[in-house]
Length: 221
Image 1: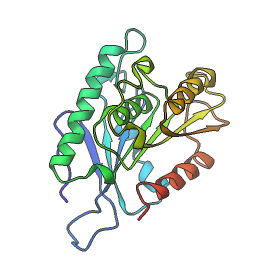
Image 2 (image 1 turned 180 degrees about the vertical axis):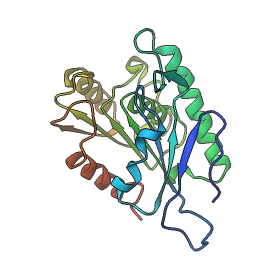
Image 3 (image 1 turned 90 degrees about the vertical axis):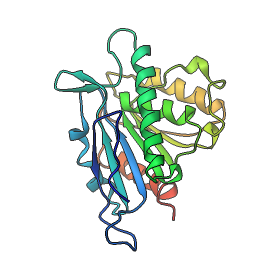
Image 4 (image 1 turned 45 degrees about the horizontal axis):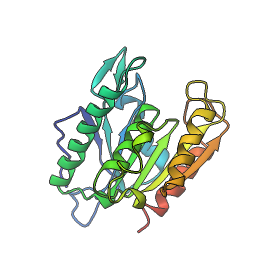
């Protein structure tokens, strides 16, 4: 498959190193990666090596708004709603463009950190097709009051892993955990894991759990 062409957002594509029978074609497994506030696609170029999977390609996205030296998916502080809705539209369009170029949703995983976590969760619960996996790190849920009415027809089929730090000073555990418990009570297949960490990604236990989750979802075959 050719490198994806995305019109809605600036992206960086990192192809899989393991290829199919066609030596010119990368594997069809894809992970879409959304960064956090003030970061960019540049901040996630380490991810492929940490995932330790040669059969996954990566599409690193830049959020639409400039924020100091990086980008943001929605305003902080202030009213986040307009930014979330606009970013949702951009993400829907991105997935639709991928589909039009031959990428299948059942071979796509979503990965997001902080603001990116909120956006991948929002996308997964509202998009009308099932993804292979959804991974959200150190984030929270938007528009919780709209659920379950706003769930797509396949929201309860999505395989979701949400991780968080017990010592997160930006998004305290007591704020995020009840949200995820509420989503679980609404019938979502949402796995919740806590780590002794701050607002970051633990390279050991957390990444190990993420790799294990992918082996059961995106990379199950």
